[in-house]
Image 1 (cartoon, rainbow, N blue to C red):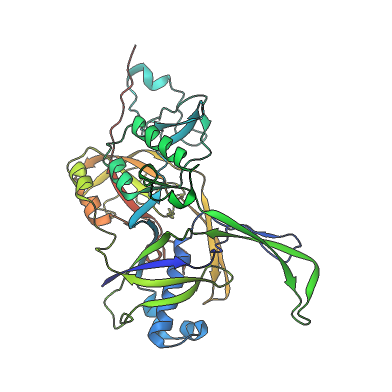
Image 2 (tube, rainbow, N blue to C red):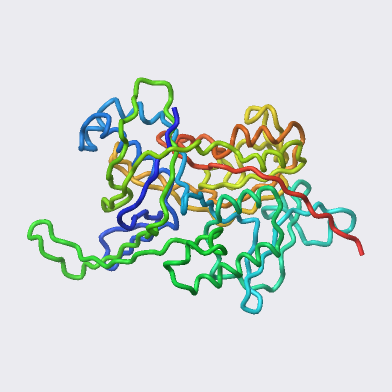
Length: 421
């Protein structure tokens, strides 16, 4: 049984990063750029437990057997929706920069080195010893360019489908981004309705508030005890979408699902309701046709992923080929990956009443380039579209597959051959 939920935040959401935050005067609770999948998954499970047990107490839920059954539910999200269209994080295989005040784009694709070009690019693989230099292919990047500070954080599903189908050129990106850049200076009320702005969405604004600590005995303010909190402001026309997949069990689904519930830190409120839809795991036909028999495929992460080997998925062997126990119908060979700096993800366990260990995640938007060695990659999109590709975590209590970490999209790409002069 699968259900779709729409979450509309009422207040700015506090979703702290892994930096310490204590009683030190002047402490700042820094916020992450997006809502962590584990925060959303824990909130949904707690809300479902309250609705199914007719209890408003979280402590009662944690001691009951209902929550243990709900832990088996798979929750995929969050994705963001604006004007009835989903939005995904900007993929990292497109480099945006500024030239003479105009937005420009450079498509990042691995290049198969041939002949003398293989030794003239200064490519040493990864690590101090040039590990994998005979397996990975180098990528050409523009020289002496200035990064574009106004880069969008999300792209629409329509634009992502074209990108995964490899049908967008650098000129297409530059033209659309130029129109979007021009629309940012217009009236904010008309921004979402303009044709040129519909494919892009900016990063969320942070609400910064200064507070004073309160003495619990006298209920008066403490001297020199100011602290600051950051929170994400989700625009009123943007909502979060998550899919809940129930396993075969005796846990029912609440009737007329609609409720206000806290989310994130400081008990900020959001409205949760069930919506109708086909689910999140249906790959568009346009992408399926491109993937059918393709020789090269891309994997784009839409949520942060945990991999046992750091930036490398654990389902790749020493030769960077996919293992048989990961997917026995398709064998992949890694050729390159566009991965930014690792993202810290931790949290607080209300069940164990303690901090969760900080883990290094591969950020959303990261892109992995594969060459198909065997099988039809169409099968990947049919079975793994917006499903988790994370590795199993050795720590008990980390349910990455169930919490929505590592949701992936699949597309095609073509390598560029080096041209000899």
